[in-house]
Image (cartoon, rainbow, N blue to C red; front, side, top):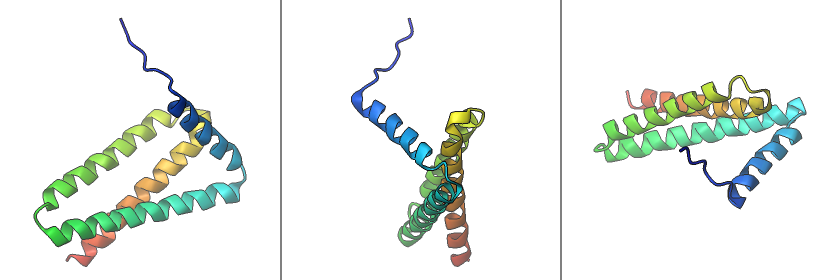
Length: 113
């Protein structure tokens, strides 16, 4: 017997907000501006995580492992949503977040050399 998760009010509101955002982002300028904002947020998070783990110096392997797991989760989510036409905007946002995180990690690694 397979138990399906409940559709709570919170889950319905999240799905509704994502659909509203994707309808709002039909305009290419809006879509690319949101994508750029998400890319910059990802860059900020990546560089912040790199700085915090570099300051403590005790958690470098753990922080690297957790960031790698998070990037792999984003890649797996992209694979799941890749072929669905309705989730094309979500794939764009996931890619922007992933690229921002990667560039943030990369620039922090150059600073630590």
